[in-house]
Amino acid sequence: RRPSLSQTFGSSGADDEGSSSDQDLLDTLRTSTATSPAGGANSLKGVGSTPKLRRNKWINRQVTRVANSGNLQRLLQTIQYHLSEMNAINLVTALHRVTKLAVSGPESSA
Image (tube, rainbow, N blue to C red; front, side):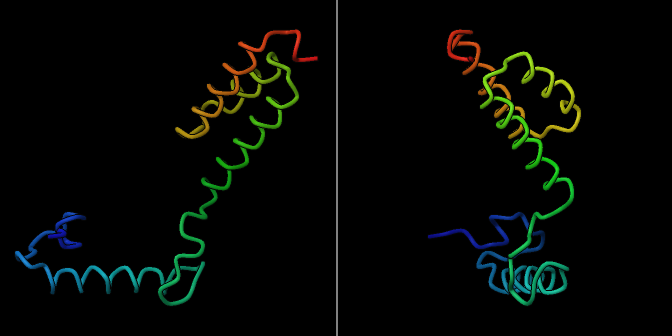
């Protein structure tokens, strides 16, 4: 038997079946997405399109662009410059790209 939405998402005051609480949770989700600036009723398009998320995506593109150039020193400078703004995905991308360039050595970065 699958847990109810309220059990899964930790809604307080849910009964064992969770049917009325589940409906309340669904209504809340519908209302919040319907009134969001990004979409209409029941639309999840644009969820997470905050300025911070756009900035993190841009940072990831910068890290990958510099890494693809093969210049390890420039990559480290780029990471250092954006470090205070990076989220976990940016950090993992940066670590992966630095490792990839460091292992490949200077002969393949020409």
